[in-house]
Amino acid sequence: MRRFSKVGMSAAAVALAASGIVTALAGPASAKGGPHGKVTCTSMNGSTGSGTITLSGCSGTATPGTGGSSQPLSIAVLAAGGTVTWINNQTTTFGAPNLVGGNPKHCPGYAKGASSEPSDEKFSGQVTADTTGMKVPGKYKGEVCIDQSGNITARKPLKIS
Image 1: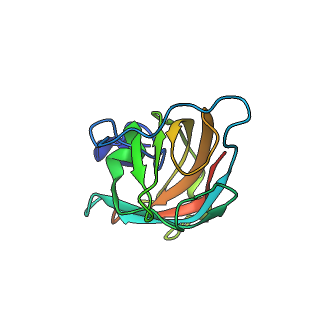
Image 2: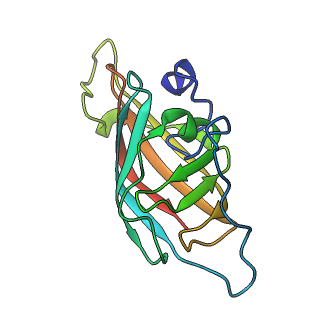
Image 3: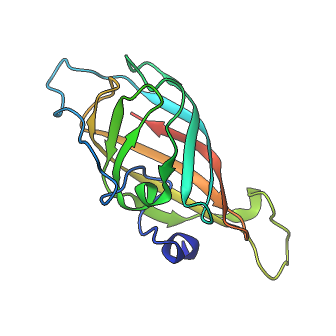
């Protein structure tokens, strides 16, 4: 959790969307019988050094969907909540995430007894707006590893439902 804090990530990675990054809010919350699609993104790659991350391997039942990946986004979006613009120009707005430190044993670069280890961050939150066909209000959750060089990778897929 310290790594997120050090780079201005007070709420999670991974949690997708930045209050200062929000450039356009998606449509209003769906009414009963509205969209109920779900999306899973199997990959998250970026770094604290570049300040950006990309979600990819995204598929699911949402229509029109995400196009398979996000446009590069600020890691602040994952930390504070905000809008993710997908490759097909649809958007999903995430509320600020809840962060919980995880066990880094399964993260790349972990070595038992090493003086410095990668960190593992679990995140979850609410979907507040969407144009991809997902349920609103909805929820999201995922888990990322952050190595000592600041590289961010998915530990578990990002699930948006």
